[in-house]
Structures are given as structure tokens and as C-alpha cells.
Length: 185
Image 1: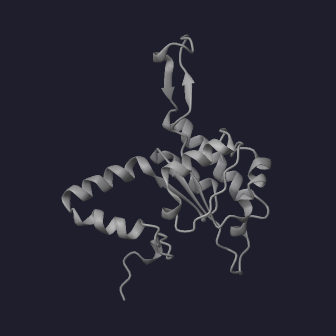
Image 2 (image 1 turned 90 degrees about the horizontal axis):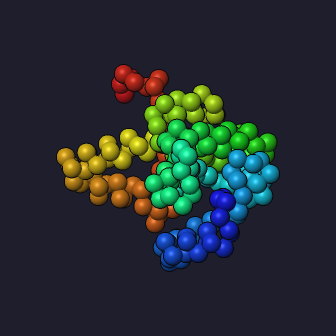
Image 3 (image 1 turned 60 degrees about the vertical axis):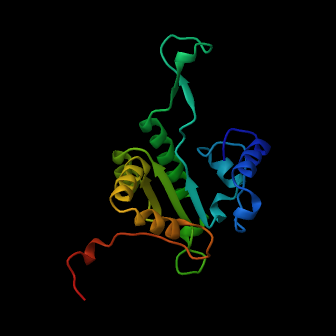
């Protein structure tokens, strides 16, 4: 869901990922704001099997007293501003009354929410504000760490490609279990 026109979003997606490479994945495009509950209900966010909240890096804001025609007056949204929007959206999704992930004890309890965060401090706020099914991914540190590991051990890129390719029907979820630290089998 974006402020762009629905047809424009579909066209950008069609050009980026051809249909044969989608492997049957269905995406819903709608114009609206992910911060408005009525817009989230319009796209049936409560019935989604999984929701990915992407950090808004494209929005530009005017800085200082410059005019809109001055190319130096365009700045990218700061990481803190982008993370604040992601956290607000995650809280809204978490609080939807009929969200699939809220129904426990049934096969339908699979509504995962993955939120991209650009700062480490926002990860703690997200964990405090949302239920455990909302998973924050700090992409600022994640990519740097992966790059260092791939330089030290090139086979890691092959392993990462196998784990995170979406050609197979298996899903990959990572979760920490602090209560198991130090236990032996």
C-alpha cells in the first residue's frame, strides 16, 4: 500500500519481477496510507498470511528555507522518521481486531508481520510495543554484517541464496530461545 496510483504500483512490480519468477505469489496493490486503519481494512490486511512492512526511504522532505525547485533542497527521510512510520504501521496491524495471527489454537494463526527497521534503537521499541509475532529486521546492520561474512567466507552467499530463495514452498523463520542458552542435550 502506497500513496501512488494502484496501476502505477502494479506496472513497477511487473517490470521488476516477471510473472514466471513470482512462483504463484499473489500481491495486493492499493492506493492509501498504511497508517489509516480503514485503508488497512480495504486491502484485507487482517486476512493476510504474511505482511512485510518496508521502510520508506523514497519520501523526500524540504529542508530549510529552500524552494521546491532547488535540487539541493531534497533530502531523504531520516532513518528515525522512517522507523517511526514502520512502528506505527506495525502497531496498527497488531491491533486489528480480526487479524489472523490473533486467533490462537487454530491452523489460521499464521499471520506473520516482518518490519524493516533502519536503526537499532527502533528494534527495542518495536519489541516493547508489539506482540511476539511482529518481527523487526534491522537492515542497516544486517547488510553490513552479511557483507563482512561473505568476504571472509564466500560460500555464505551460496547458503544465503539457498535459504532465502522463494522458489520452494518451505518457509524459513528464525527465532531466539534465550531459555535454551547453556543447555545441553
